[in-house]
Length: 212
Image 1: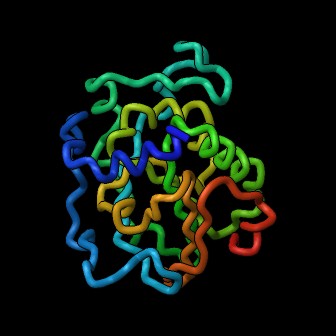
Image 2: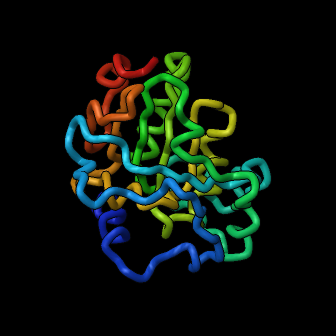
C-alpha cells in the first residue's frame, strides 16, 4: 500500500526537484502542458513528455553488490555523485518527438521500488516479441532518480530497444497520473491521444491488442 501511495505523495510535495541530485531538468520549447486540457480523459492528447535516462547502465554495479539479487528486495539508493554521473544531459534526453514512429506508445508511470511495477516490467520483457513498432516508456518521478540505475541494471532494460526507462522532466506524471494505484499504464494511439489506461498490474492478454 505504501508503495502505491509513494508516487502520489511525491507528486504533491513542493520540495522535490532535480536539484536534489544535481540534475538539470531538460529544457525544450515543447514541454509545457496546456492547463485547459484534462490529460486524464480518454481521447485527450498526450501531455508533453521529456525523459531523462541513465547513461552508464552497464556500470551501475554487479548483481549482488548491495544484496538485491532477487526481485522484491529493497533497491540500493545511489548517492548524489553517483546519480549525477549516470545521468548525462548530452546523451540521455528523449522527448515525445523522438518517440513518434507511427505506432502506439505505452507509458507506464511507476516507482522503481514497487513490487507490482517490477512484476509488470517483467511481463513486458517476457513478451518482448510483441513489440515490433510500439515503444514502452517507464516513467518515474524525479525523487526516484537514485533508484533508477539499479532498476535498469536488475532488469537489463538496455537489452530491449523498445524500452526507455528514466525520470520525468516535463511534469507528465502530474498531468496524467490518476492517484489510484501503481503502476499506471497509459496507451496512446498513433495520433498520440489516450486510448486506454490501467491502474495497477495488468495481464499481457489485456495489453496485447494495443501493442504493434
